[in-house]
Image 1 (cartoon, rainbow, N blue to C red):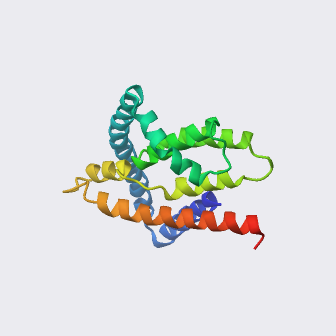
Image 2: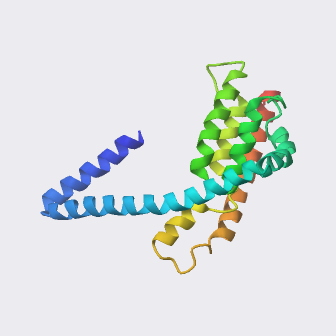
Image 3: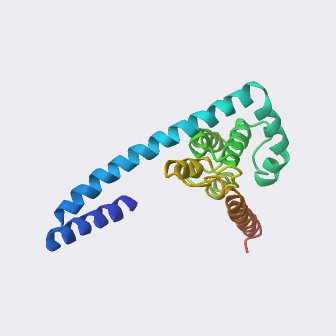
Length: 195
């Protein structure tokens, strides 16, 4: 659906440019957009490589295991129907840890593995389980302590203070996560009691 919307916008833009005689602006915008896209990607690579390296060091030093253990009670509260010894819980906690540090790209593979493990223990394979829905809601709204990607983009555009958004990001993502958890708990309660 999103692709159809984008294609529609592009076609409308080309049509308007053709009618108004501004086809040259289309060419300039296309090449400039491609150039900006590549520049942003290279900027993101440096920051992501740095944080992925830091995460690897933390993993080798055992810090991630400690962090996952510290998050264990939170995981059991959020995912009461996932067995404690299930590999899914490890992937979920790793995914949450990566999201906390704003490593969305690094968190994605762990989120996919968590979904695969959750599907294995899903009693109804044709529908998403409550745990899968909770994971999706948390991934979408996750608390972010260090918005790495946004900081990298701000650095690319030579922001005077690229990290000044950290405070507002923490506040905004905290609010979104609290709302997501409350809604998730409400729907679980409603389904359990058939309200």
